[in-house]
Length: 222
Image (cartoon, rainbow, N blue to C red; front, side, top):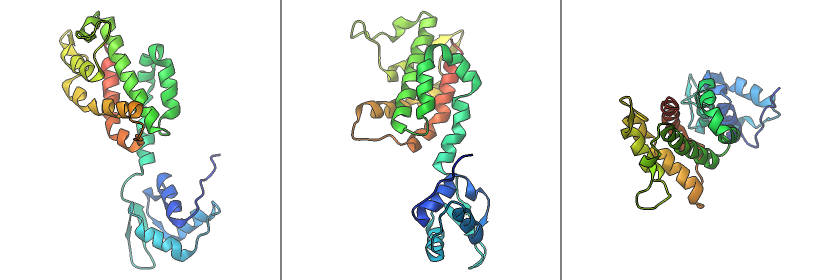
């Protein structure tokens, strides 16, 4: 059984409950206190009342003394968790397992824990996947950097080429997908080269539907 998380103060305690989905349904002061008490968190009523009133992720209904609280939106951790089944779907994993075993293991371990590692791995998988799909169709020369012998163009150019090159009339990436995934290149570059900036998982989440779509479009060419 998963151990319940505990907190040092009322504000942090409410954040934990929010992240665990406790406020998906309306909760009153009594139910909040009971939940926290089961974790060994027995904060002063006055402190908890202030924390509930100031929690920006909650809204309330009812009259003073009988308020009920519910979340305004899902916690970032819940959104991150909800995306995982799409990223690690059986269909996608089966298609990628042969050439991306190590990357997928690393991604599973770091997803939701480290924004830096997640951004870097998502970028690496995308770049490698474009390369492999082009290689399968004998189009590697398209990825070669004409200005430097023995080198390939960068990911931005690869994405552009993937949206313009077609197999039987269908591009490797449709233009909308290609446009939307440019951000993961930026985040991946930031994680790898900008030592002063930490990539937060929250900044990756909006890009995830597009990066998953890109992977699915590319594996069709394998």
